[in-house]
Amino acid sequence: MSNRTSVPLPRGRPRSFDEDAAVERAMGVFWSRGYHATALPDLLRATKLSRGSLYAAFGDKHSLFLRALDRYIDDAVTRLNIELDPRKDPVDGLRAYLAGYVHRTSGAHGRRGCLVIATAMELAGRDADVNRRIASFFKVMEARVADALSRAKAAGKLADGVDPANAARILVCFVEGLRVISKTASTGAITHAAADALLDRFIR
Amino acid sequence: MSNRTSVPLPRGRPRSFDEDAAVERAMGVFWSRGYHATALPDLLRATKLSRGSLYAAFGDKHSLFLRALDRYIDDAVTRLNIELDPRKDPVDGLRAYLAGYVHRTSGAHGRRGCLVIATAMELAGRDADVNRRIASFFKVMEARVADALSRAKAAGKLADGVDPANAARILVCFVEGLRVISKTASTGAITHAAADALLDRFIR
DNA sequence: TCCTTTAACGACCGATCGGTCCAGATATCG
DNA sequence: CGATATCTGGACCGATCGGTCGTTAAAGGA
Image 1 (cartoon, each protein chain N blue to C red):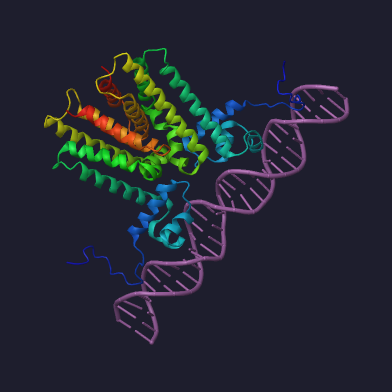
Image 2 (cartoon, rainbow over the protein chains, first blue to last red):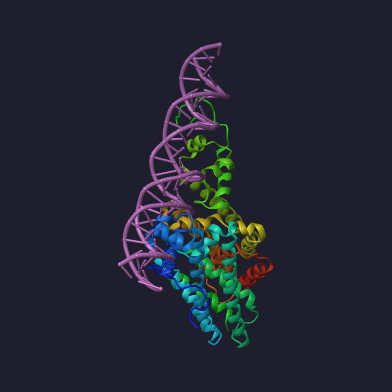
């Protein structure tokens, strides 16, 4: 059973560009420049599309931005699901999670910042679509971390008196704060040591 | 000895508006909307100035923004110096510091966000003037917190194995991360509990 | 009171914004 | 091959951007 949705077969000239690749390139531009500072010509240059093609494919700048943001968040959630996979050791997972952020906030990587945070600060207050996506992302991340901490606690690996929910919020705020200060500071070994020290306060 | 700098006395019509108050109102607009999303008419409405007056007084939008950012940072550093005053008990100071951020990130306050973080994400990568100010601000904050922690350690109030420099970076990242997630989430009691739990891991 | 000096104002500027539309190219199908 | 459908590039649109400048109003000093 091909042609599942009973849509008539396309007849004319087929699309000659990869839509997902265009979204990814657009994501890169928004990531580097932010929403307002990204002008149409920037997006056209990055996607190698003409105005007409871009508007036909994506509707408008805002819709393309949402596609790019979704892509960025999907990537992050995928990474999260791998690092904090319930089938793996939760403490190892938390170490990998923190190590990932330390790496991503070091040097030039760090200075590029984070599209989610930049968007939260630039648009979340005045854009319901954006707000929903970002609130959901932070919620998912905190839930994944809390789950890993709960499993660690059940395995007797948490220090006395550590509450998984509180510790999860602490860890999430820590890594997001890392991304903020690494926009301007070169956070190298100190950050690595800080991440280790923080986790060591929680595990037995 | 009046007229110290041998500047000729002003002769014509004196300025009829308060420059500092105008900077403060402009700061509020940039704080709420961000740099790029703030248009001249927004600033004119907020400051009750005409285009001509605003440009005569402040040069251009970017210069006015730097004035506003400096004002915001000065306020924050002043608060920091009060909360973490070396003459006061360092642990009380750290509690006040965290409590201030918890309060400032709750409810509607939280959703307004933080001008420093928003600016870091929006402009720091491409604006050296901005980058310098923000890097310096984070450095000052981390230094003040580290100093308080060092004093606490000297007073025997720190838990075993806590390094003031690492703990300072952790606390700064935590509070900045708080500001990020509170842009979209309503962080109420959980955040308060998390802040308490974090500090309790460091003090004896 | 008159003159000098400066602030205040808003019309106006070129550039650029996001977005539309059309003419021409091109690929597929009957 | 011809008909058809879609893509492609860029001319073009009104709106708005940040910024300038000539005019007017007002406040001393002489």
